Image (cartoon, rainbow, N blue to C red; front, side, top):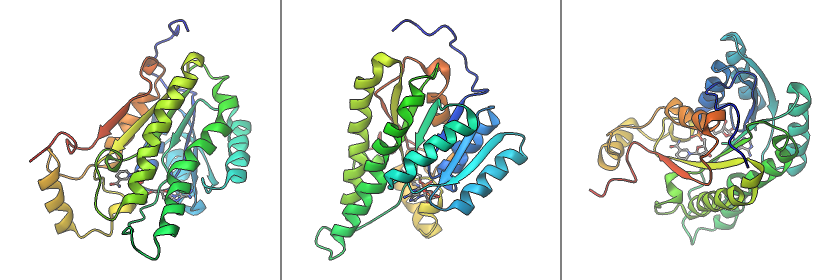
Length: 259
Ligand code: NAI
């Protein structure tokens, strides 16, 4: 593979699909892509929230369209990916962001269900969306895949083993596909967010959030979804052409801190 001719920092005209983009980090990431001039395919299990996010991008002067998509449904993933490519004329960037939280102790009666759901939505879905996107990524001048894992992939919280196992799987999938697709110039990277203020953490009482952030992170606070979104978008620039197979914590220093 030769060095790409245009090491541009512009995403103008790029076509980006962000899953789970109706809320939290996905929405923030989609909005940043929109502000940078990309065409944004905003998909979410919750079609109404996807439409609201796409409308916000359009109102800000960007280009976006929404689709309802359950990333754990292989048929839907194929159909929506084809619709995105048909609407915008291809696909350059895939951000696998959709996620759920599924705390479950190992001896819980609900453990099998939590395990199956976590693996389906948080891990299997990544390979479904990637396989659906590959024909178009292969035609792109700057093909990029970013998978959103979690610091739970690197350390772990009690009663969170289905989630932690799925997220650790995402880091392995990222490395394996970076190796497999590297010769085609497709980069595959992974971000591990720490505690971020999104729909997923909204139910945690403010006082508990503040205590946790002070005790665990170096910066002493929860992160804003856009602070993850900017890292994701940076990995998708044409100029990010030599970064692949890496797992980057965006965690306010959580992983760096022992005490
Ligand atoms: P969020 O709850 O605000 O957004 C997640 C979005 O994913 C929602 O809009 C939801 O409708 C969508 N979704 C859920 N299941 C889906 C499915 N089957 N198909 C398509 N969309 C689906 O949560 P947040 O925090 O923005 O989550 C984004 C990603 O970040 C997730 O993968 C999550 O595991 C990860 N993460 C979140 C952290 C946090 O502190 N908030 C920390 C580390 C990782």
